[in-house]
Image 1 (cartoon, one colour):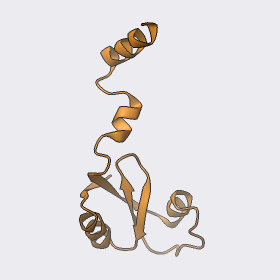
Image 2 (tube, rainbow, N blue to C red):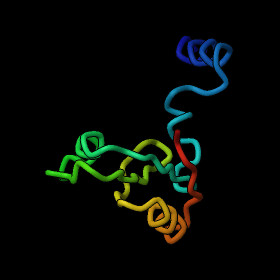
Image 3 (cartoon, rainbow, N blue to C red):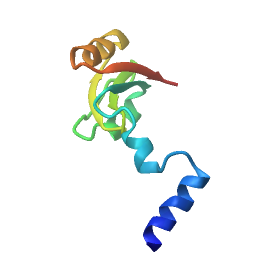
Image 4 (cartoon, rainbow, N blue to C red):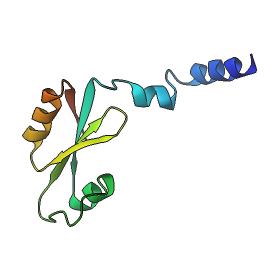
Length: 91
């Protein structure tokens, strides 16, 4: 009963918990975020020596999981749509 009370109190302060927010849109929404090469290398550890002079676009799951990386925003959108995800830009 005490655990239920804690969850109930938390929900009074915020409409969603952090884990609920991270799962919102999971499997339905994909975020497109423009990255520089350093940010891309941090987000995609297998990537090494990304070109320094181009912008990259990451496709991220609703919970922030990296799904794809491209040098074209339109390709990131197409990848989301091909995978039955609704693309949303992150600014």
